[in-house]
Image (tube, rainbow, N blue to C red; front, top):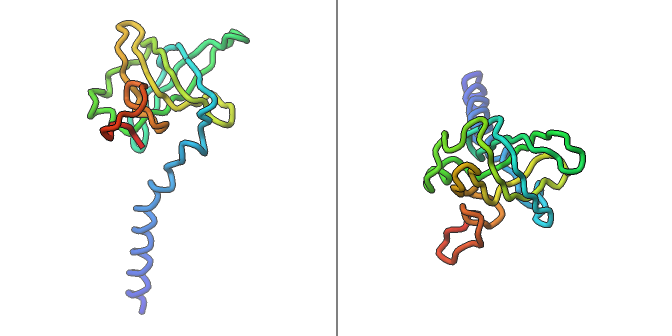
Amino acid sequence: MKNKLLNTLSGLVCLLALATPAFAHHSFRAQYDSDKPVTLNGYVTKMEWFNPHVYFYIDVENPETHVIENWGIEMGPPHMLQNRGWKKNSMTIGDEMLVEATRARDGSTTANARSVTLVATGQVLGAASSEQQTLTGGAPADNGDATP
């Protein structure tokens, strides 16, 4: 009886551990408002290259208050970015970036990137956004190139 209970509990713990990443994922529309586009120009302060989404952070001067704000920018999953030529070191701390994004519904300094451009070279790094955009920020292609 005791072994059966331990086996059942072990199985439940394993199932919970496997399900945790699914709970961490969110709906684009629940977090971001596609009617709130934002263009940000700032300097990279941090990169997080993890599933389910890559995040990077940039310091941006607020044009109204002239206060520096640190924005968290969400992109697609690492494998999708890598398939399009991204590398972990495609941007580094201190790089100036131009970001076309969709602002978070809660008004925080968080956004979902549609297009990410390295200012020094003009290279469009893309974003693998969740907002039905291609990696380069254009409209989705009919060939299935758009991200979910």
